[in-house]
Amino acid sequence: MAKGIDVGTMNVLSGRQDGNETVFVQQRNSFVEIEYSDMADQMLSRSEVLHIRKDDKVYVVGDDALNFANIFNKETRRPMQAGILSSEESSAIPMIKLITEQVVGEPSRPNERLYYSSPADPIDSELSTLYHEKTLESMLGEMGYDPEPINEGMAVIYSELADNDFTGLGISFGAGMTNVCLAYYAVPVMKFSIARGGDWVDEQTAQATGTPVDKVTSIKEDDFELDFETDVGGVEGALAIHYENLLEYVIENITEEVDEEDIEEGLDVPVVVTGGTSSPDGFENLFEDHLGDAEIPFSISGVSSPEEPMFSVASGALVAARSDEGDTHDDESAEAEAEPVEAED
Image (cartoon, rainbow, N blue to C red; front, side, top):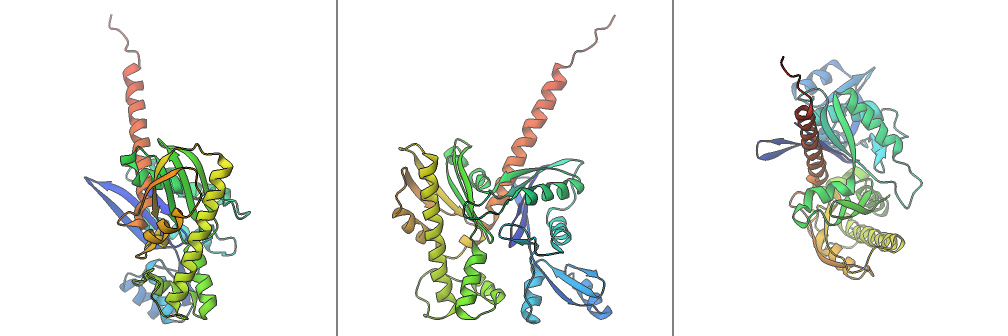
């Protein structure tokens, strides 16, 4: 059985096939530090709160971290920043390992195929994704998997554009980055990332309104809508302003990259927007409005968003893993059939 995993800055999600259904498991990619006590440790264990102890500290990890941060008026800490492992967080690797183990579980068999998401190098930053990609590969291999990276934008193509022969423009709006991929019959024509995403929106909104970043994140995730009817000066109004700025910035970079790649004119492609940052109601329509004003040499047949945009990358990674596993089994069967059989005397 193959699996796919989306290792995102805000969330880690895995996908696996169970009969005719795809089962997803999700954990928030964050943690918060609290003082250790025997009572606290016992209560956390009894309540099945994911946590680990280190010296005189307890680290609450995953979905519960944001709740504890709000209760204790603390900032959550992240194993990842700007789409890759954080160089500023000393606990990044052990924390991401704990969260990933909780999400993907143990392999169902030795060397189970696992595709994991990896961002493209950003075109507007000097960040490199190489260390991040290779560290995840090593970590997943130590867990007993046979890991393979998949470009995050390409995972969107695999997940959402099967009915269009895997041809189109897939855009994953994550927390740390925005990943873009244009594919033609499952062959990537253009892929890149932009070093802005949901975290950038949250940070800019927090700075503009004087609101803690975690509080802004909670407001954004709690039925926030891009309707531009919110009160001026409030957190939701600031979120709307910075969301629009993010979309304009992403489309501007797409336009520039298309010109540099010299994409053939005459293409008519669908566009799919996914990722947790694209979740608010109104995002799809706002993106389509701004894309319609851009000077792109190919025509857009429509802009769509999946019903569960958060699961799209994990789903695409699973599609790639299952296809690869099927090809491997076919090759092994062919080799077995081709083996010479010793004739009997």
